[in-house]
Length: 283
Image 1 (cartoon, rainbow, N blue to C red):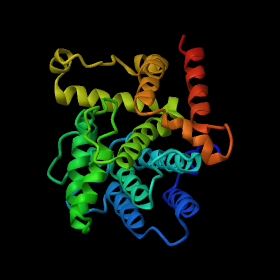
Image 2 (tube, rainbow, N blue to C red):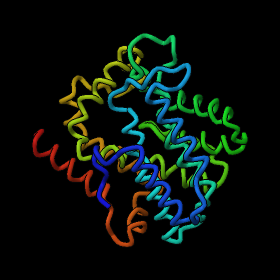
Image 3 (tube, rainbow, N blue to C red):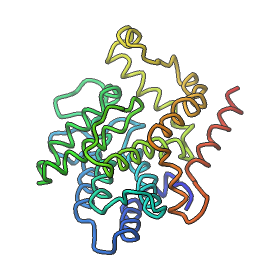
Image 4 (cartoon, rainbow, N blue to C red):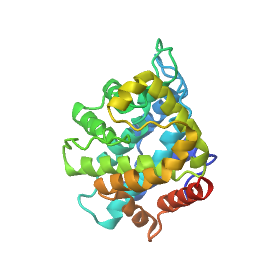
């Protein structure tokens, strides 16, 4: 299957994709917990969750969350089909998928938070997502030990990945690295990735203003002057940051071909196409 296009990447199609890969790996007996979280997250992003605004970030929206799901579940499936150890259990498949669904909830503003958009939380959204997940998962009755797995898996997302995560076991580590990898694969492989980069810059710009430009400079943060600079820098980001991050997380993207039964990796192929286009058009 090629990378999902924007029109194909609907909530219904993504839930079916999760169910199919789950059934292929663990048998056809349903995913009630994942399905519940899935529905709740869709409601949250769409503004149908008490105490929260509708998601108003234009790049890190529900579409982005849905983008991350296919490469994540395909990495887990490929890992299992490759015979790698430890085999990812059904429980950790669920914990990881729940983490995918919740990993960008930190962009969503609570009612009463009326300044700007959720983009202002770009640099703090991972911890905010962890905080939201912790409260939400307790509310739906997930045991504390299982919640801790989900929270650690979410910690593997964001550009500045926390390399000091203390994983509770090897399954948690593998699933966390799968999510950290899928988070980049999903967005950078999108057919409309280049077209959406100006929107991503707008989110960055709002976060710069919210955090304070001088403060960010003192911290050594990379700040982009405009959307054109962000686009031009994307090949360097991919080659010097993203690929390094993939290696640090165990090259999880290399397990996707096992899911497809061959050497094919549609995500890296699509990313390389996008990078080639940028290099050609933004010389």
